[in-house]
Length: 366
Image (tube, rainbow, N blue to C red; front, top):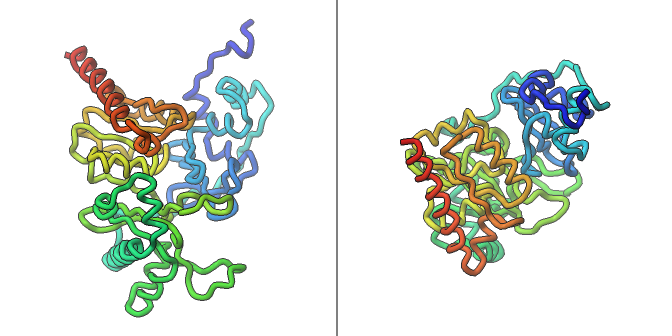
């Protein structure tokens, strides 16, 4: 009789028989509907603010926007229990004791906000916020210094319409004109925390460098980077709803594209004038990759850590032979590499090796 450790598992069957939402709920995590997703508190970090764990029943996957990690039911059990792949499969197959749940979960009823489908009023408010943030940036030396330290030149700051939220200008501007209600519905403004003692509305991205997603010259979405890393505030904070692909228009119709994991990795690629985009993390469902239809090669520029390697495998399954992951140095992302002496040359060598592989594949295919 084969030992448990030598058993082979039908992974797809395990995923079908153990819906990821049930697995997550089986660990006592309360999930609530939010559009087409279920949202709850992530167990992998101190998720005391806005819930960051998103569960996608349609694709049987999950993702934490704070941790920047995700996967399927097996990956969730692995991380929650601190065990390996085989042990997680054993747990799901019932060969080891573990949490199970057959609780009927709430089903999403309303669609999550799609930022590429704004009303005219909402678009005006988004464009207004983008212009105010851009103006504030040039009056905030700390923010400008931070961008330059991260290797972002001023011309990229202008081209990408980067900004800074000072925490009060947007409300004051909209109160004198119109759009306050729309700004609250979009998530740009909200009530201050009860213990803050602040008056008026709170800017969601206050105190952050703001990176917009631009489509056709219009701003449709924001993600903000804190100037100071701290335990009580996430590094990145984005408007709620379905995250659009950052830089999508840079790659639509291109034969080559560069998938960058992080926001500053993307800005580094833009600095090097590469056709780059970013999911602002390591997760992008396969059904949202249609904009890469004409790309013959997609280079994966993911962090040189465990999460980056796992994401590279997932994108490889989705993109097939077009996928060319570039192996960055251990513990290094593209922005780190770009700030190193000779970093750009090192990256060019990695791309050159990837191109040789791509040509070899084409020749073999012919």
